[in-house]
Amino acid sequence: MALEQYIKELLFEYECVTVPGFGAFLTRSYTFKVNNITGEFIPARKELTFNSLLVSNDGVLANYFAVKQKTSYENALRLIEKEVGVWKKKLNTQSLYIGSLGKIKLNQNKKIEFEPYGKLNFDSSVFGLSPFTKKPLLSFKNSKTTTVTGKREKLIFTPENKYRKSPLSKTYYRYAAIGLIGIALSVSTFYFGNQYINNQRHLNQEIAQNKIQNNVQSATFNLGNLNSVSLSINVVKKDETPKLKHPYYSIIAGTFRNKSYAKRKIETLKKDGYNATLAQINPKGMFRVAYGRFKSKNEALKLLYFLKYTLKKDAWYLIEQ
Image 1 (tube, rainbow, N blue to C red):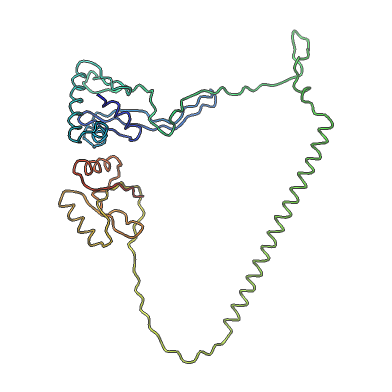
Image 2 (image 1 turned 180 degrees about the vertical axis):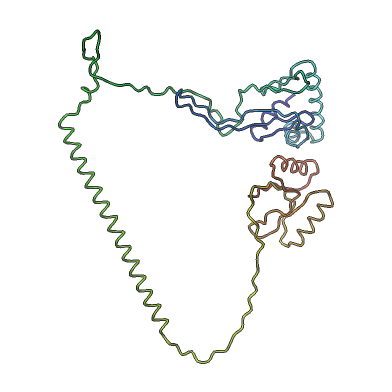
């Protein structure tokens, strides 16, 4: 059966893939490592673990199985349950090998132990990049002579003699240094001169503006008799959404322009058993109604897959920050 292959494919996209009634395969992220002494480089990676307590169906594996096998969601669930039954029977007598993922066995306390093969890196951002070792550059000291049996002998290769600077090169470097100093002085003179001109320009603009303002204040205008006009201004305060201390993962049921309609939708969802509430207002000022808001991404995804693939309801996923 291709169930092991489907689990492997999903792990490159999801952090958690649950096999209903059996357990969940999870990936854990690690950053890259560089050993400056040995020159070893280990790229970023996602390593595989297994949790036998997560057995509830989140819909991910069943839906992917149904698409790949071109069958219904319910039939996919039945086929997965059948395969899980075979796995459990094997575990009672021998170790269970899950494709290229790893080995599962029961310990003395009849608890499931998972041993990953460790050959797969589920971080798709570093696909094809494997660990390697780059030998560090060796540092050495050159000397003109070495002592052998108390005698000073010249080395065959003396880097100092080979790369000894000639008088011509010294003159060249001297003129190059003078040229660099001249360029630096020219650049600094242009920069500070330009800055002085800009400062003077801003100062003159401020003086002119102050004079204009004083003239306007001292001027007298004869406008005659003006009728009084009364204005009434209604200040509309928009609902301000407070900043969140941590992100929420919400499953949105609908968006409404009228807040009363949003509250009516929340009451309807609560009667159906959902922990419905208002989510973050969208940029256009419309009110979002959520089936539920979660601090856990996995809990939010479980509700989303249940609504979409089991209940066939319209819902979408929102990260509130």
